[in-house]
Image (tube, rainbow, N blue to C red; front, side, top):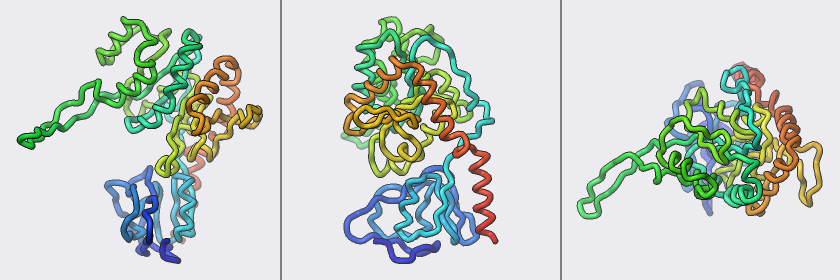
Length: 350
């Protein structure tokens, strides 16, 4: 257990016995320590196996001698580690930024989309059965949209005999995005041959794909990535449960809310901070629900069940989107969060 009273920068937190999860970081890149700004090149993450100092830890916010504020609500539970003055300042959306202006591209299909990066293979795999079953039953009514497709990267190869290292560009078929796409297309079996041939050219080029069962959206710069939300009605947020996942920000839920998207998400932290399932255990409808949540023990069937529910009840998509927007629009507005940040900073310099 940590030393009692380890509340000041410089105090040590020491875990005896079995290793315990580290405090994980997300967000900004600096912390205030005893009146000085200390830059961090990378966040501390992993397992604590040695004595560490408070200033070795980074919480996705600011650490100072008066208190700690985090951008990830779940981290507040780490107050039990001796950090008593905790202020939660969440990630937020600047709704005045052009990329966060909803401009839904019309379609007759119900479109399910995922937007993210290259470190989500375990999460995407949770969708496999649901996507496959949805294609089997509703192929002509749906479209799956994969956003962020990116082939950049290198591979280092080592000669077994000479030990010489050589780097080369990664091949498209070696990327995690190719693996994602195989799940989103049921291994390309739901697409016509001409479209499959086009996709496997791996070229960012125009194609008449508006009515296809699947659309690939290439990666965009940080100032435009959110425009991809305009290509689908329902946002998918699978998350493999773990301590690491629980310490993430629920940004997918926040972004979906600002775009008034219906959201199907894993019923695990951090999503359970704000999301309430409209379908309770046993199938009872909850009128206060702002999303559809998938029990981690039922990934094999609930992703399909929830997608089926929205396909057969399209009015539910708009209703859930509006409720999620009401949940996030004030709480996660950058204007509101910045006002709280200013008040916090003023309070510690008095």
